[in-house]
Structures are given as C-alpha cells and as structure tokens.
Length: 121
Image 1 (tube, rainbow, N blue to C red):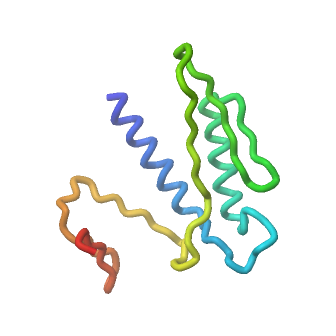
Image 2 (spheres, rainbow, N blue to C red):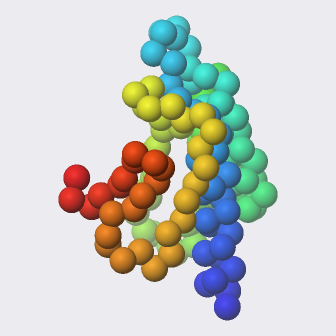
Image 3 (cartoon, rainbow, N blue to C red):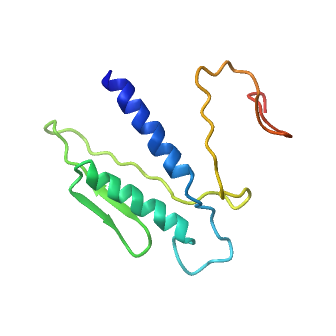
C-alpha cells in the first residue's frame, strides 16, 4: 500500500514539474537560468527537498540547487545527482498537459490530430 502512495506522489510531483514552462531563452547570454520559469522550478524543488526534511538546501545566484543528505551507512562512498532545469527551445514548453499511459502496450500513441509518438522513431 505504501508503494502505491509513493508512486502516486511521484507522478503528481512529476506532473507539477513538467507544467512549469522552463524553455531556454537562446537570446539570453548573460545570466543563468535564462528564464523565470526555470528559477520557479529550481525553487519549487528546493522547497520540496526542505519539506522532505533535507537540512542543507541552497540555491545560489546562478540557479544552482545544492542539497546534502548525510549517509546512514558508515564508510560508504559519496555520490551525487546532476540535472538541469531548462528545456530545449526547439519545442515550446508552454501549456504542457501531461498524459499518463498506464499499462502501455508498446503501440504508437496518438497525442494530437497529426502528432503520433511511435516507438519505431
């Protein structure tokens, strides 16, 4: 039962994230992140990390989010996750409406009138 609850929370979180417009602005060369939407996503993730109990969370002037979670196993190696908040300007990230296909059967998915997502492409 706990697994279903965690799965539901993760899907809801992912859907919140992808609905924030984070399309990179190619015309902005002097700052990072290049858009307010990217900073919105970064700050949301920082807030959610703090809500989960992570103590060392910070966002710097360049939009770099850092969080430290101490290990609970003695003398194990440290690892990190690296990601970015922007999405390609090749396709708009505005008004994203996530579609979740449970029990996907491997066949092409019709997304819009003339848009199909095909596993063969």
